[in-house]
Length: 184
Ligand SMILES: Cc1cc2nc3c(=O)[nH]c(=O)nc-3n(C[C@H](O)[C@H](O)[C@H](O)COP(=O)(O)O)c2cc1C
Image (cartoon, rainbow, N blue to C red):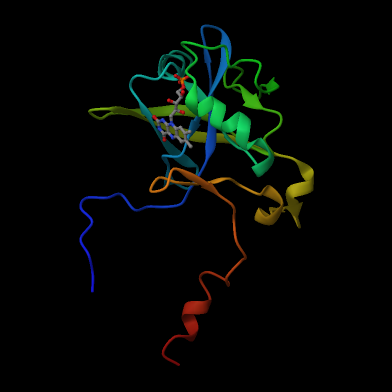
């Protein structure tokens, strides 16, 4: 029997990311799980309008999306608990910059996406920033035959329903392929 549990957003789990932007001339990072894919090289991030980071993204017209590994869970959570308006988060990680100059990226995260702001969607509680990924940097050791090997990334998965961090399980099977077997 099905139970209606109300209007619950059950899109769990989501990758936990650290979004970086320069605010007041300094890097600031916050944890963001509401990240979406808008097109091949376009991603969206939904930031509550109260956050300190938003003004920096608007001003510099760029941001970064960094993928922390399991070992960074404590620092990641810290950046999701405390606002740049109350603590200085610029020294939590080692920052570096790419072609856009104003999108701070995290050295310790093994994947960094440098994004140019191309659109901002105003919703009642969130600024949805749409970015074009202009470059993706990653540590060499996560590449197998030139492709990112998820088992080496060890992403932190976030579950809204239990406010928990989860780890990635095993690879199930090949997408765009297994379905060809059905009905045969
Ligand atoms: C796991 C996790 C995921 C989060 N995801 C989001 C999110 O998708 N959108 C959002 O607006 N805030 C999210 N937050 C909250 C912000 O990271 C948090 O309020 C942060 O302190 C804001 O930083 P800032 O004020 O320096 O910009 C998340 C927090 C955690 C711990």
